[in-house]
Length: 88
Image (cartoon, rainbow, N blue to C red):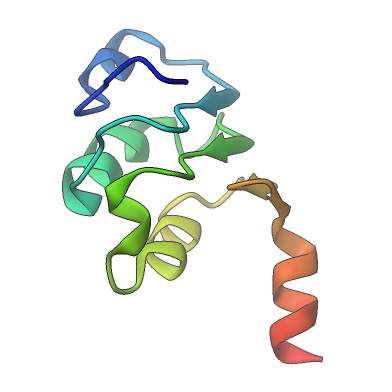
């Protein structure tokens, strides 16, 4: 957090990463972020990218959640709770 990160390029060497917190940085591109996170889709369980410009992009939540199949927590929220609130 608060590292002035502009991208997630550093993730390329972290194949078994399970948790990622990059809050309050300068990440702006959802497509670049997804591109870097997809190789981790089977290991990563928790991501918090809140307080980045990317969070304001249209479909940010739905794209991130759909691309990362094993994700349990996203931006401080339990994924199951998000779906329960929307669909039940």
